[in-house]
Image (cartoon, rainbow, N blue to C red; front, side, top):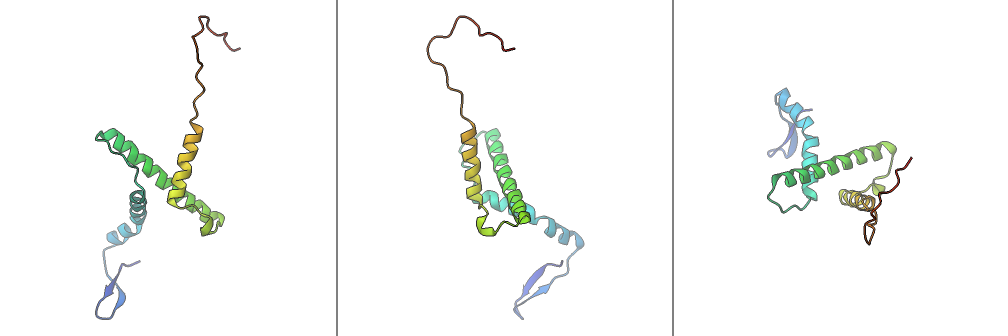
Length: 122
């Protein structure tokens, strides 16, 4: 597949000769460009200067976008109509709600601690 450019004299797209390496690069980079675009749509707001927190935030956003692309690929394979597919924001919102719902801590006991240790479970 040769790259196309617009010829201003004829106002039509024409094929441009390019080395094979450039054609392969253009073919393979569309996934990276799409991922970068999706990550820039809804970035995770992190206002810290510590680099580990920024890296973790970046990897979380990376994982969310890759998961959404996988969701779209599976939905297309299953024949789900495009109107029923979730967009990026709804997908990220569902991930956040499921993480919040799954992180309920056990209720803490109130009062004094007991002086005897509990019996071991057998």
